Amino acid sequence: MLKVREIKAKSIIQRSKLNVNYVINPYVGCVHGCIYCYAQFMKRFTNHREPWGKFLDVKINAADLIPKNYDKFKNKSFCISSVTDPYQPAEKKYQLTRRILEKLIPFDPNLCLMTKSDLIIRDIDLLKRFKRCIIGVSLSLLNDLIRKKIEPFAPSITRRINTLEQLKKAGIKTFLFVSPLLPGLTDWKNIVEKTKNFVDEFWFENLNLYPNLRYNIFRWLKNYHPELESKYKEIYFTRNNYWDLIEKEIENYGKEKLLNFKIYFHKKSFYCLIKNDKGLKRFNF
Image 1: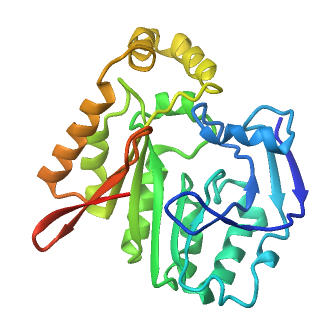
Image 2 (image 1 turned 45 degrees about the vertical axis):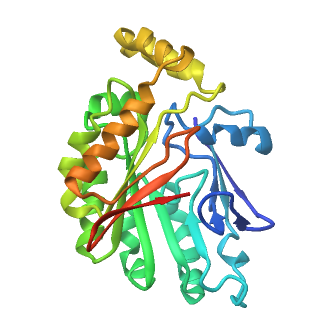
Image 3 (image 1 turned 90 degrees about the vertical axis):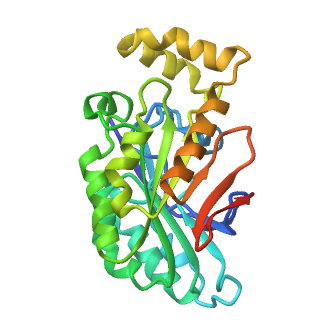
């Protein structure tokens, strides 16, 4: 059973160690129930006893914490969100993300927002008012039967792809976060081919088996994909170049197709390839 609490936060704009200046998380927790979610580490700081996916704290005063004097934050880069989904079902009732967006418009920020939900279509009117804005949808699979087992309460694949189409049609810059890349299951080339006409950038991230996620992942494999258990153990617990080869394959494919893409493989340097008049230029982070 989902436990929802309305709380009052002390602050809402946090400095970030990501590739942005600040992050905003309107909620604590996420109800999608993705078994690979790295944000489960948040329980160490929130003192929730409920399993990840079974609690949600709603920061009801989130928008009120956005300062009216925006000089400090003007022209800075913002990410919504880093450890929650800003458009999970509770957003339909509370509209925290919508109210935050309204308050951010005068900041003239460089805005990045990522979600799994088509609820974001509701706020296209606000997103179009940001001069620098990129909106992303995360997607790992094209098979909804598998998706329901690993992301049980997340929106369907069809809804997510339709979201990208609607955003692009509205003139909003889009990215598809192909994450996590699940060995033996993620057909990333097919994902790219199905979405390339309405996606401006592709971001790739490999599955990181954090210690607190290993039990969940291997239990899931044992129950639904036992044929992959030995493959995952080899990839993650022996010396091998599996992710180096995948990374190179993505890079070659991206160059061949002239894609704008970024690779966020764990324990590696991050980089992106951006198209210009002379072809592709590499930028390291």
